[in-house]
Image 1 (cartoon, rainbow, N blue to C red):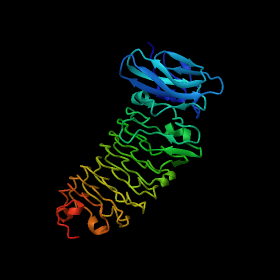
Image 2: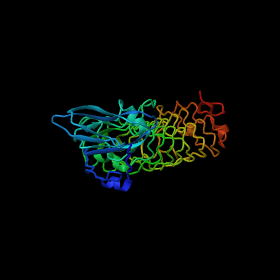
Image 3: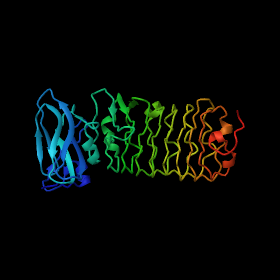
Length: 369
């Protein structure tokens, strides 16, 4: 069996290096070439290239499966192309001559693709018809993998090049990288140059369960994120996440809810300006729940928040037993708030723990009716 080996620099510049030297067509946006690497851990595994195309005219697509096998596709109606590998291994699959209208099926029916994908070498193509919503999502309960696959360690800015310098992009970013268990890096520039609107005003679960992600920069640095109202569970259970920038939400002027956003992470501190960019916040339920490494809470963290009966601080800092300094006196700052149960429950080492009212999760008898 011939397994092609690729030098990355040469690969990305258009030359494949291996037993059979070959010049490659350009990675033209629109799908001339689509290349990725998969890791198959079971012998005799059947693998389906997730491509869909109903052609109005003859086509000529060549697929190199990375094991020395090449398939030629001329059918006008493609609903997935299957290949049987003889043994487990790592294979770089390349499809040449894709029509511009061809779509990669990266959700739903391509579970095998998602589960085995370890690297993408060319831009992600649209997941829907022209003008429709482009989704990059798994599901909230993680029963379906993100299109990026749970083995991918690094996301390259080039992967969204299809959408750059185009207008009218409609993107659904909910659960975009959830759950990419091996993901360690996401470039700050990922969304640079992309003109888009969000289909639902949400980045919920975008990085949920990215357990290897240690830090993030200003990933939401595109003005299009002004439409975001909900960032719930955006970094939920990113257990190695220890650092976030203060301007993380700086583009989200209308952000309202961050429930579970940083719960079960390894944050040791919270930037004091994290919530200073929106005047519309009302929901902080479970936002920092079980952040066991958290040592302190900035006194001014919620200075930008408007007191109202709609505020929700339920279990916001519940289980943060590592806090040793004083917690902010939210019970005095927000007297109108009625949804405060368990906000500081378990913060038993906070220096002012005894002053926390029962209704806010502390031991002090509540004097309010």
